[in-house]
Amino acid sequence: MAMDKSSADAYVYVKASGILARSFVGAKARELFSVRSLKELWSLIFKKEVPAVPETMLAAALEKEAVSSFINSYKRLILNYEKPSPLLVELLRFYDYENLKQFGAALCTGQKEIPSYTDISPLNILNYSKWPDIAQVTKNSTLSWYDHVSTVQNQQMDDYRMDCQYITELWKALDHVDSSCREDIRALFKEKFSLENILWSLRLRIYYNMDSDEIPMHLSYAEGIAAKNDPIASPALKTLHWATDDWDTWKHWQFSEFLNPHEEGTVWNIDPRWIAGAYKNHYVEKARKLFHRYPFTECPLVCWFIIKRDELDDICTASESLRMNIPSSEAMRAAGVQEV
Image 1 (cartoon, rainbow, N blue to C red):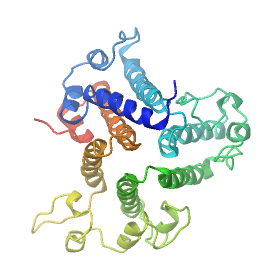
Image 2 (image 1 turned 45 degrees about the vertical axis):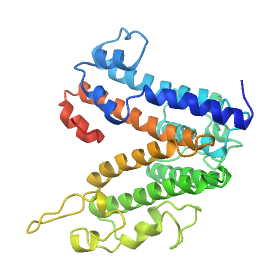
Image 3 (image 1 turned 90 degrees about the vertical axis):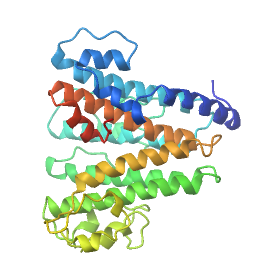
């Protein structure tokens, strides 16, 4: 039953705290990588019996169950509010955007059967019952512009537009967050989106040999409009002409603490994968600390979403490592989980 905001804030804080205490986060994440089979991993995470499916299919079933569990837990928390904060809702609608990308990819190859999708009802903006009419699926939503079956060639551009729109919608939703915690949450997202833009620009330069002058049109912008002073794009724009092998320049970068190590006398090149892994732990740790700072606001649930999404990533990494017989130590490094 939905409650008034003050009652819901207090109730959700207590419930979310209890869930996190039982979660595989922080040092407890190591337990996910200590098991020796997918069946053991399932029994560690879920109370349900292990499904009677071949081992080759169990990883997919486990990951699907983990996503469903995460979303259902979040919905049970958010629906305690009579009128949830727009930011809390927008965080969940990430899955609407991802579902639409899958739908677009399926339709442009002529697929008739609806793809498996992540259900976030009743908070969805897409009408999934209207498949395969994509214009009806997106009608009256913020994604109504996606009213056509895209070509394979245009699919990437449509996906990019959706990614940019999702970030813009999240940024706008920050304006409606409780004033006591708004700036701390905004700073958290600003840092994350800024670094994601920088990493994307580096990947375009390093892996795709894209000219630096072309990259601005491939970045995301907080206001949805390309501008040099955009709060989440300007840090990437600043680094576009920095040589990727120039340690002396990058060592003064605002995110230098996440750089891959440099040894005097050896060739150094910036490694986006290293930076992404190092920042992931920093971002989640910031959310963990922020969780308790503003207990009776939207802040704990925003942080809960971030922390539990990280747990979900770790579960999927552990599952895939077991499926592919990857050593646990290697899987933990990939997930950013520290060994003892």
